[in-house]
Length: 287
Image 1 (tube, one colour):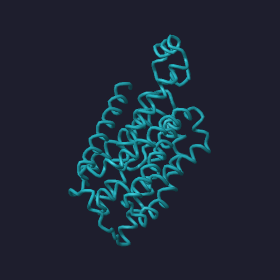
Image 2: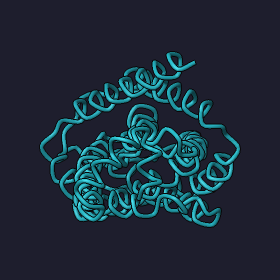
Image 3: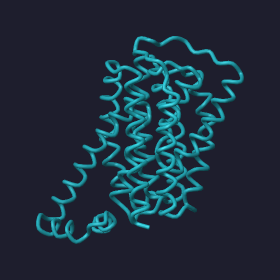
Image 4: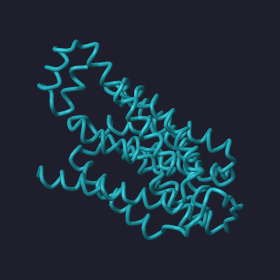
């Protein structure tokens, strides 16, 4: 417990509090906060179909500046898997998932996710932060440029893609799988605007199908991280956050019925831009 608090960058204050209150009380408060944070991540991540990793990963980067990129991404990706699995169950009951293309694109995303989990071991923490910031800002721009026309939850029309569109979707899915596992962001931040703006999926079908694909790619990446021993320092944090996102995912899926598609996309873009700018600012001010 003391080692994890030390990584948070404020060891003296927090250790003093733990000694004052008792280690057990301090641990309970910390994990309660992680569970509550998981509920927020799960709710918003499922609402926009991004899995919540794009929220969780930068928060972990800020809270644990001395953790390795592998540890950060392994925690975030495992929690994203829990979120995507729970959200997919909820979206499946609502009949919003396009299983035909979801399974097809999942098959392409999984190999990319495994490669990303392997590649992150060779990326230094400082360079990792910079790459993460650039990807966040680029994703925000993509969301604004490719934001689809307004739709609502009742627009669940069938989707039929040409061979060229399917090939395009497969290439996108490979890249999304790689980036999601490399950065621990899940990949929905790219998949949702790609499915909706490029491939023509209705927004609410895109968010649900993206979540379904994410369950496979995040699961594969998590298995690869487990095999590499990346969970050695983050298993308790992962469990606490996962409990929260399992609850939040159900809340987010239900909320999506009452939220307009374009609002979902715009909220996603704003969140991405803020995260990217914040990390970029920290990178250059600490140079």
